[in-house]
Image (cartoon, rainbow, N blue to C red; front, top):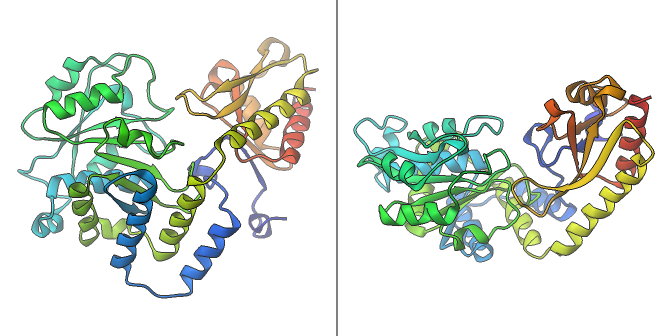
Length: 367
């Protein structure tokens, strides 16, 4: 019985991935120990923000890094920093940006809802989102024509939530940003590679600390020091409402350190091994077809795709997911194609015993 079952909540088997709604990820014992020690001692918080940022930058290759309470907070604080610069008067004036340059241009197919609209996070920082192009096609002209004298940045969203076809690449967005002397913000919240996006042209790159990095609830923005300095100063203004404490800062720092040393091939091999076990569990089940698929956004993440034969099951994808949640333990899977009778099972948080439980539950549902 885990700690959540002890307070009367149902056990959750997470076949959905690094989802905020399910508690995101599991921290390691060493991250937990680091957080415990941090919580039992005092520190000057401004000094800690600088030191943790410095140590994370050694891994990312950024000039500096600002730690935040989440990737969403990092978006809001980045926008705020670009609006106010280092002016304390303007920092204390936010979220009122009347008369200030405050527009952020993003591709229409990137105006996603990942649990909340990304445009809300832009507005939280005092910005006005400007969507360029169409939801299935954006050309360079669309972005350039959306830029005016009040534009402070371009935003690129690297996410499976975003439209993958017909959008401009990071390189194309970077070229436009440079042409107009604007910074490019890249939201790479759930990305696995914490070096790539600075190299591709991001001036500010945002990550979640709790997703791929398996740290506590946290985030960070890494990149050019001139912008990071202004972002850090937002903790004297709107950032106060989204501050990160010493415990999560130290947990994040340890998680980044561990992540930088991980064996990426071993991680992928384990996903494939577990995927093979689930395929084996379901190989004799005629009411479903299974296959291994890669993440839609091209990350090195592999999942088992389960396609229902709706004629044989007389069950929709949404009904199937509902049944998965109604058993002895709640089984959560990825729902993005449930309307097509397809669900995906993410391996990253699962154990062999979880795989057997999922296989048995699916067979029970399909009887």
